[in-house]
Image (cartoon, rainbow, N blue to C red; front, top):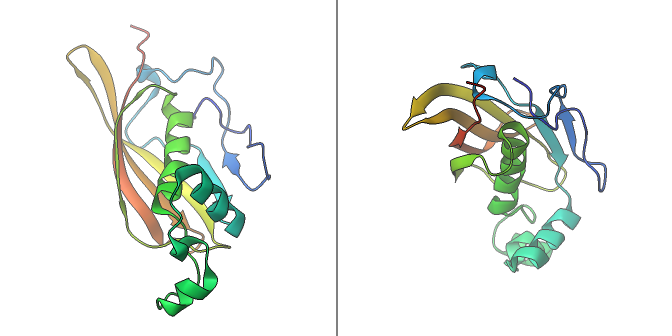
Length: 165
């Protein structure tokens, strides 16, 4: 199934793109989802500006994310991205797919660091559908990888979707 906002692109710096088609009514229903369905891919090239903007918004001013000299002194090849920024990219793709307010659970593991200049892309796959206590639930595997396929963030999510029935 395709997410409500698929194919609409992103405003802002133009770095974000989504691949897919828009659904006719803009709402993903439980009956429209099958195991193996994939959400539209969100792509974003990580920039140093992203790191500084995120640091200001989150209050996470760890120098490993913005100070090249300190990052190298600590043995890193460069500054690297905030894990929560990466999780936010996955979260955006997830809510684009299932709808804002429909995420019941969302958890990830930060597998690898992200680096400025890397093109990152999301992967969201439906792994199960079920009805539990009257709720129509969809379980998903979620991930963020670079263009080489190296997984940076991996996890799972559960969403509750409206039903036509």
